[in-house]
Image 1 (tube, rainbow, N blue to C red):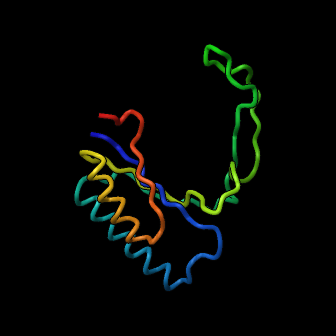
Image 2: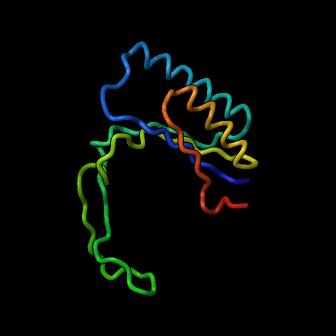
Length: 126
């Protein structure tokens, strides 16, 4: 059965007030429980702020045969790119098809109030 990533895009800026955040998290928990009850939920989690990210990047590039040119790795603090939104959380679900995954994406955006990107895993193509 295909698996899908539901990505939560968090805007930069001040987070919601505690009472508003509590209401959002209540809706999120309800949505997650409905996913579990439907048998589609595999995993979900929120991520720390983008400032906590560390990027690990191979610096040598690729040879024509697809192998790495060298073992040099650059480690830098912070996100890969500057953006107005960043990945704030994710859910992985297993559904019959994209239409079902999109229905869960719609429910998730209504629960959280933030944009949700629905994307199939590469190996999940039918």
